[in-house]
Length: 464
Image 1 (spheres, rainbow, N blue to C red):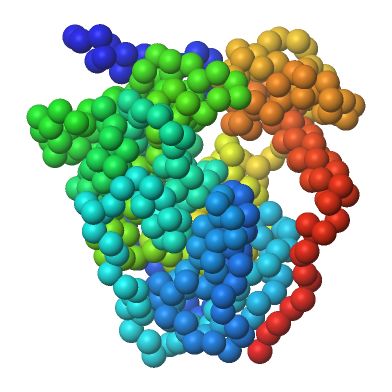
Image 2: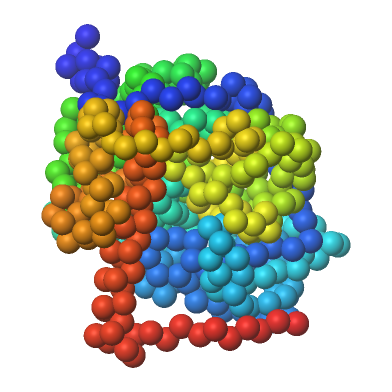
């Protein structure tokens, strides 16, 4: 076995082993969600600055048409998921219960819903500098969870050499199987996207990291790759959070990404497999990012599925397509059970980052009785970032935010391994998450106080 191959058998330190719960959907072919009457497109669907609307109430828009333009470098375009009319520009409810600016579209029931986009440029004629604005215009974001506009990773500082391009196919969150289905059903599309990025990034090696609980994906891609020296498959041990970028780099390459640095600083670019497939689709058909593959599962779902859902579709409509909710359902989570968001309303829309809808009954959602911390150290053993979660939780309760920052709280990725492993039932990650939100809110308020002219948000509502 070569030295590089032996690295593929490594894993990262710490982490946990929750039951996968993927059996209900991992073998289900992907279906397309039918179009519905109304779509809500929140502007704030990407990390960074939200785009600015370029449409007006009453305006007719075509499927794939730009309806909001980027407002900064870390921002991306937003496109109409259907042909129809702009019904409103105003505040609408987010999955977490907040209200923020959105564009509401009424679908035309008589439209063919064909794409109304221009052919994309030929990627073979592009430089890396050309690729960045093209991907920004496509509306593609990182589909592994953070929703960072995809083009940001491809804007490299001068002289930076990319040694490894890594496709993240771990999908370590329990229940979720949409990335799995992309690799099984569309392996050629994934490889087409990898070829585009491998060529334009001038990467030395491209590696696809896949957990060993997806043997059909590993076998299919391995057969398709054949003896192509550019691409390799890295089978990974099943462990959570294997899909975290720093953990995957540790597992595949045996390298640590130091705190404060990005993978690109070490010559590594990583993208989720669905992000890479979306890039291939854009250059193949011109289709911007307007459809999201979502896993619908959990004990409260009568008919689980992997669905292609137009962005902006109300959650209520998606659940209705899957048979509605069981009578004993108590909670619906958007995303995975470890890092997902409990929904405040079923009228909230599917976002670019919505990887799953999971319905849970009272059995799964009954909170454990909380006891005092017994200093057992299990949360420390579980934390893949070698933090002290119980100490951070105690600081969070006392609102010792400066002390938390000195204890590297901002390195926490909120994976939930600490809460999962705590025998005292302490909601450790929830306490840390709330503290981090307070820290960011205070930082934002301080910045706005120093520059009042930057706060130009409007609460105006325009509707037909």
